[in-house]
Image (cartoon, rainbow, N blue to C red; front, top):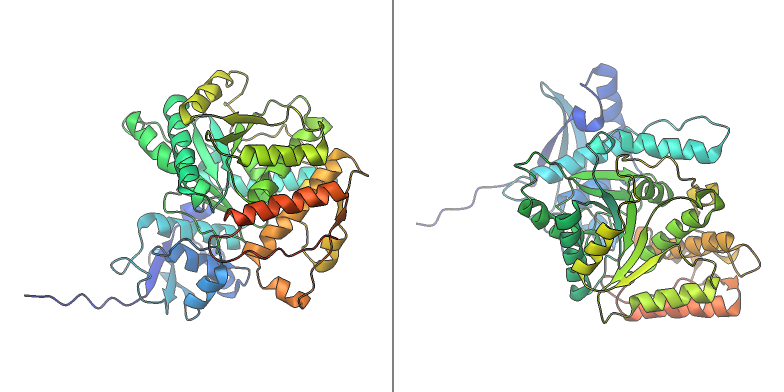
Length: 452
């Protein structure tokens, strides 16, 4: 006898949990404001919810496909005896699993509500850098991440489009680091290297019996409004934070961690690397103890390519700011252990670092602003770091975050100005990324600039 499957309808209801939003309960005015903001929010909230629902998707970094797939979805909010309920209707068939979502995806939707409609107020201050840093801290303080027992925490950066060998290396590195050092990781929460360390640490925490011993570790994902629909959180993420822009996201990575690790990637990975190097290179941070490692498996050529490019652009100005480790995952974990004594892991937020306003200020990607970038040595190494970071940030903006914007240029491409050897080395690096599939998961990558 064959039974017909139950008539699931693609409708989802998610209880909005007040404790995730950082409040005790929903009283009248707060509930009304949340409901109004959700239904009027136009800054990517709907696409974010769609990405969190689309659990059966193939990894894809073009959010236009997601937008088309969920074009009929409507989001409403209603009040019930148990509080507020977010209701999604009109979703495409196959969006849900047996008519529902796994609990972790529902939690991520609540975290998205918190970060889109309950963001903290920006503090008033005469020092813009200090005000931005306080805002970033207040954004993270609404989560449990600053109220936990001390533990070593490392941010891990790297590509969403990586080979299987690179993915496995990042997974094994996460495994050995978590097994031997108890490290908790923060990543950009998407696929590729953003997922691999968690796959390794899951096994490591299990082997150390952390749960039964009452030791808690999270799987932390820091994203941003412009990119989360294109690089949706993987299903492992337990604490998701969605920042308003990439600059605040980068500052949070650095301040919420004790050390940083970077694996091979593309333009976004270089943007991240330049952000950290810009912070570390500032004279105010000259005495800061903050290890930053570029790691790669034996036989790879990424580290050599990137370090040669940095040498072309900066000479020896960045020497000592980044350690390059080419070797096995276990040997790197042992290196982390051997170099960890000087790091204070008691604090889960680093207020001592100074993050300059040039790194904190969002760069508006326009044709004119790209042509105004100066990629020459007629400036300090710090200013060149800032401008190169803005250039690579623009590549991510146009390829992943807002791919429609380039179409408004009518086929024209902005000309990038600077020293010839820097321009040629940078263009060669990007071409190499594209040839190795590091710029897009699918399809051909077209460079949105020209050099002459």
